[in-house]
Image (cartoon, rainbow, N blue to C red; front, side):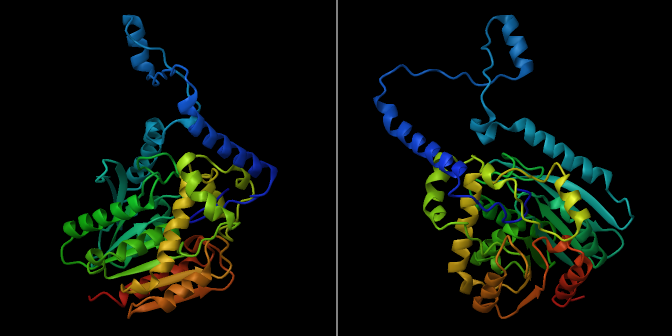
Length: 386
């Protein structure tokens, strides 16, 4: 599915292909239970050997032959070459655009998480304007922070320094592309990243901007009492708070499948992507971007989105941070009605919502993007003292 944000809903549950997936799951369960009783000798699987090491070791007579393992069962941690490729693209884009227009200084840095994963981060700093506020930007599912470069530059013009973080499995960061073992990892990483940003810029107010699943990650982050006092406000576009599976039975199957087949992709949902913007050029640019994932949603990723959405809906009243939420009324990926629920139930004294009739999921890539950006900047300006 060509998707963004909290996209990738699993369709065609009762199709022949879906029944095939179910049989695969049943077979996996049977293998788990029957394996202890097979009585046969365990076969040893030799780990893959890199071409450089393989040639050297074979010449010395000490090496083991490399074993080709189907990519569908390779652990996500082993995808180092794929990560290196994505990271190289992300770095090249930043270095090529550093201070090109004379108004924005663009740079990047690597951020190591508490788990030891390396995340790609980037910064947009105003050159001529004094910095009066900070924005921590979080992209949606399947995309990356670099897609918001134009928005970041607009923020720079208004005196905001912008920090973008590619969360795990996305953009130039570690992890199998678009695979999310736990969105709690992303929440943990964001908390640490906010702390780093504040430490580098003492005395400046810090705001967060998040799109779709990125917005959901931000919402869960600012529910933490240790974080909400450090954030001046959040802006949320198309937040993934209202996300439902195509069939109720998926709520039952998702936890099981996410454990047994976490990186498995639902290809049945891949061909009929839901349009996320009414701008054809924006869609072309998005889906020709190698840092944007266009494959089928992975089982564990889908489960994690359902899980964080459920958690947030149960804790909306705990939201006390000032916020602005924006949603398109024609969004088919996340529910505009649940954004209204967030607005009504949140305990924040300072809260605003704007619904855009007929607009789709990727609000900052719709034809009305300039109007939307200016609305966000106006909201920020009203909460920053010059």
